[in-house]
Image (cartoon, rainbow, N blue to C red; front, side, top):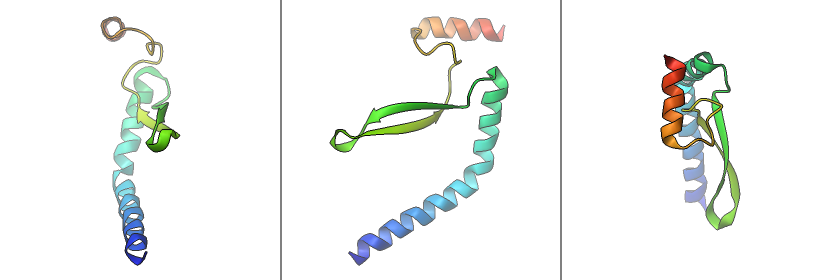
Length: 84
């Protein structure tokens, strides 16, 4: 039990330190995405985890907002025409 508590404490402490160190980079990436096309910087998606439990994952967007249902080739044409 003691070992499990120490591991959890270390995990939380290291994650907090990593977040603090990476925060400036995360802000720059968010602003770049936001300025590129004006849409939200984060993409939210429901996924199935261990035991079938649903959880929400947040990721930086890599595609324009209007292209979530387009096939890859069509999405690439959309991106190419938007940047031209």
